[in-house]
Amino acid sequence: MSRGKLIVLTAPFTEMIDHAGYFIQMGMASIPIWMEWVLNKKYPQWRDVRRFDDGSALVAPAGLRVLERVMAREFGRENVVVCYPDDLDQFIGPDTRVVAVSTHNPLGVTFAAGVYTSIFGSSREPINAHYAARLFDRIKQSPSRGSFKVIVGGSGGWQITQTDSRARLGVDCVVDGRSESGDAVALFRKAVSGDPLPAQATVSHPLDAAAVVFPDRPTTFGVVEMTTGCGRRCRFCVPDLNPQIDLPKQRILETVRANVANGKRLISLATEDMFIWGQVRTGVPFFFPNREALVDLYRAIVDTPGVDQHVLSHCTMAPAVVDPELIRQLSDILIPKSPIHLTRLSSHPDGKALVPLVGLETGSVRMAKRVMPSKGVPFNIDEWPSVVIRGLEILNRNNWFPMLTLMVGNPGETDEDVKATLDLIYEMGAPGALRLPRTVSVYAARRHPDGARPWGHGDEAAHAASMAAHHEVLEDESAPGTL
Image (cartoon, rainbow, N blue to C red; front, side, top):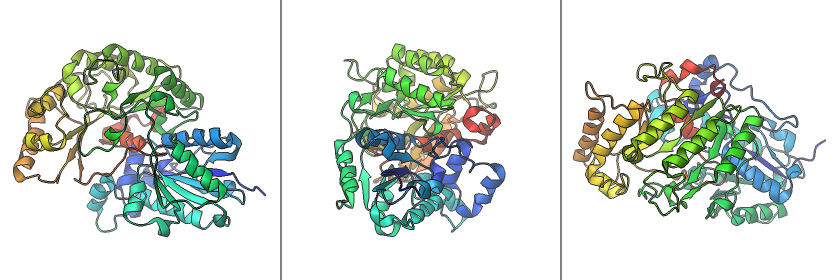
């Protein structure tokens, strides 16, 4: 009988899958559990995950893979495992001292869950919250529960602390921060020694690129970290409180190759703003993109043997206005590897398109000045509506159709502010205009942290949102990224 691994890492099952494609990932955050039959019918094999020969998970969220590498460095690879929830009994035993859980949405109260599941009535528990509850129940019922500590991290940790759900879920400690932190390692050492843990812990973020740890095993959706921080200092944005770091090209490519070596054919670079890469601490303001560096990086990514698909994550609007030639050159490189088809909008012969996530947030200049005064730099925030319109024109011309996020209910927001936002949205789609986002996703005013996360980058769900923004993504289901 196995005595178990010293440290077991896991996540809710619905956050560890990517083989069924982006749409199902977003659907599980948006569809109530009583409608799971819809996904079962559409994707009958969505539970058929692959494993390494030792039974460990073949893919896992990028943040969990970072934690795995940190723990392997500190405690030995042979003492650490990442596994699917259904395999916990195989790896938890009398010698287990830590079970660490990464979760994005344990209680089902993210914007997608709050907005979309409510459409279906009062039975609103989203599928991924249901599977998170199953995971915690399974851990609580382990025969070895008395011998190990349960530590929770990831972008959804706040849901547990703010609802005082720790005892109900059987959680010993909720961590806010990054797993590279010495404080995080010290916390795990205390758990391994059997010492008491604090109910909550905040650990630090790396201060430079050398301190950032890259995964050496495959991540869900091929997520590879590109930058941290942003620099625009919007007042609602927690990730921008992190240091502005662009990560070395060679280390990014090593992680890309690690994904490809394990059968991943889709790569996506995780970033708060892709356009700051190559310009951090160069002496040139970050809001003037480094065209040569960005083009070189993305060309190296898509030219890596085995990379069949690439998708964008987050960016800002102003750089498209600053350097339209950058957008054109990136389009030439990235469009051929895009798995997204928007045939009714794209001018590409195969209808291919790029769908980054871009924060619109508000069309009101008054509100923009209050909550995001630097959103449009180098342009004055008074020009924000014009920056949005001009940026969309440039992006659309190059077959970029961004998914825009919109915040409503900000403190002090008035009817006039809402009208200004509606006017801007109307202008985007005015008759004869090609100024179209792919969709507009609405956030409630109360934004919770999805940055400073210990072992859940949170970007997998964001990528899923962008890809699932429209049913046309299903036109390419046979591609490697959407099996």
